[in-house]
Image (cartoon, rainbow, N blue to C red):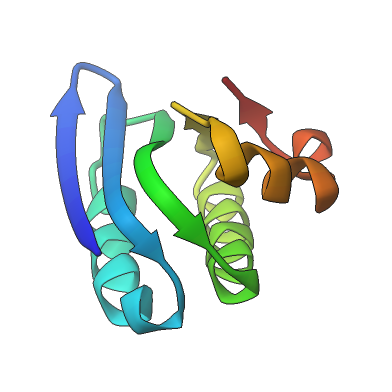
Length: 101
């Protein structure tokens, strides 16, 4: 997986690529720490447009991000969701936990 962090005004974006699974745990965790460390960023977006596969550990990582962001008064949105990734998030009822676009 390739994780890229970018900051624009009060919004931070984490772009993920390819497979989002347990092997991506360390890279995802490091990117999350970078995102949450941005003092001026109130809104966090996880861009899943390039993700073609995610598993249950990826769902757990997204929940971890949500909890850590909430503890620092930041909002998380999942964007670029499509195809099989959208199906997995729908089945897991993530639309009740995240803003999804």
